[in-house]
Image 1 (cartoon, rainbow, N blue to C red):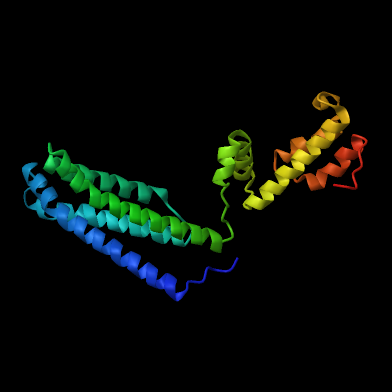
Image 2 (image 1 turned 90 degrees about the vertical axis):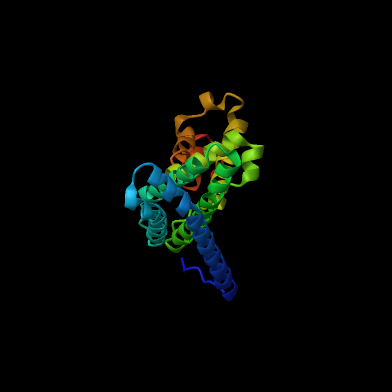
Length: 233
């Protein structure tokens, strides 16, 4: 699949988002530096207290940037993102400890780091989606309305998609329709107990469909074994 082409508007919006993320990060790091440094001094870090907050914040930025880069070149390493989350949680805890027991102060210290992480996670999601589309590996999602209207059948359909790497939602819907039509023809032929009365050869296509084998390949033989017209498949 061809790579996604970015228009001038896309580039402008991307520039605005990147600039905003940098501003958010700068404000957050500047605001947390003094609080974390004072906490480190209280804990006996000495002169190391002056660089301790910088090390944590720089670690968050480097890990998240490296995670974005590896995701872009399609060799993601989840431990990077998880470690960045851990460092972010540590920063929030350190800042919260500096403001404790004031709940408003703790919340104020937590807002900026959380906002920065959410922004980076949104960027990572976009990068991962673009990388998957470029590599023709993108798997479409099941519509939310189908989950709401038929949760149990939709779970079976979603499970089949994930197990057998069926990437197109429309393809999965077509396969499900073929299965239901085939099942309806057997029910019309053998009645409500069709699962017990139908020959094994006619039931085999339904069993194979669970493993991602299209009914278009197996239905003619199954219908012929059931004594049904297989030319209308």
